[in-house]
Amino acid sequence: MDEPADTEPRLPPGEPLWSHGFDTALGRCGLVWSERGIVASLLPDASPARLARRHPTARPTVELPAHIADAVEGIRALLAGEARDLSHVVLDERGIPEFRRQVHALTRAIPPGQTRTYGEIAAALGQPGAARAVGRAEGDNPFPPIVPCHRVMGAGGEPTGFSAPGGIETKRRLLLIEARATGQLAGDQQPLF
Image 1 (cartoon, rainbow, N blue to C red):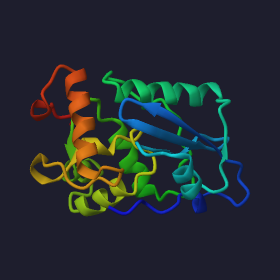
Image 2: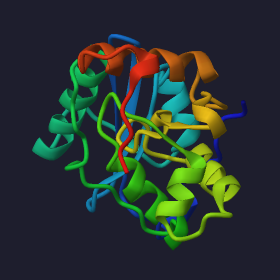
Image 3: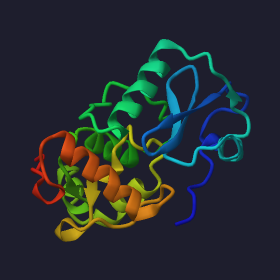
Image 4: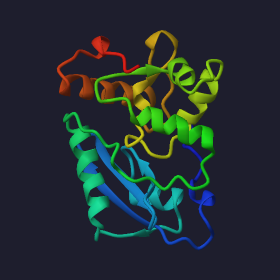
């Protein structure tokens, strides 16, 4: 799949941003943040060139505020096979439409080792006919794996498209890592709602 569009235009012009790339068990990931929270996270293949291309005004740094260092550590642990909850990580969702923020909130509530379908998320939003809109919101998620869109499946629980590098294979790897971390097989995950 094509890489999602740059997320910077949703922030006020001149907003200071910082970026940091870091190694994980699945490859190099990255974070971009503002003074209000994380603006974007990139799953493996977050090379310095990709970070700069996606977020050209972000200043690369190795000096991390405590909350960003905590997010980096949590992502590393999750991708290394620990059942980590990243729901405490503060996001900067300015400019993201309300529907997508609601999808993000429900997606963040899915614990490691569990999955939901696009239709189940739509129903939980009180919009049972909005499964495709939920799918689009998940596909445009600028915060993986903090907003764990890999835990949201197609109808019948089938893993469908995934916009991170590696596509659906990366999604399957993430689900398998989490299933092992929670003592489950990928096909035996428990429902959330």
